[in-house]
Image 1 (tube, rainbow, N blue to C red):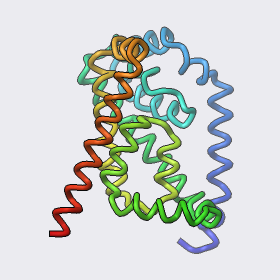
Image 2 (image 1 turned 45 degrees about the vertical axis):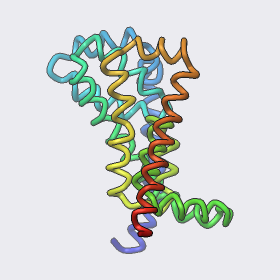
Image 3 (image 1 turned 90 degrees about the horizontal axis):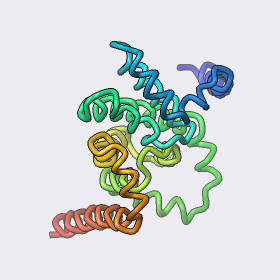
Length: 218
């Protein structure tokens, strides 16, 4: 791609994204994605097209910072848990990949030029253990779009991003798909236990990273 075409695309893509955002607002997608009963009824009535529409809804919802559970839990009343798991993972991975690519393509150079050196040093350590770092970040942040944008402006490779995202999103997606409403109630009634589980996973990944360093040093 020539530099002229690249510059043109960098100007056109933000306009298209803004247009898409406006269309979502005009067609009442925002309200729909926040209405659990409407979501459930919509996918119940969608027949064989339901899974495709669900994945597309997941892709549309994630950039709006809508929690993944807002779609996953209603879906558990429509499909079996393993179908919800597959559809949610597919939608989440596609949405995360789009966020990652857009952040890297449109914002990486501009943002990195304005970052303090302290952040650059920390980012180098993050990238050095890219896979484990990405898994830990995903376990903590789940489907949060900010994680996609952050990973996009780092120098992490696509391979580590993709594998780390799949592994990191799998546990939370399984919990919501298998237990549905019970997961939300459990987090609400025992937030400290939920936090302890997340911290435990992060500590486990840190221990694995330290073990790898010791193994490489021998």
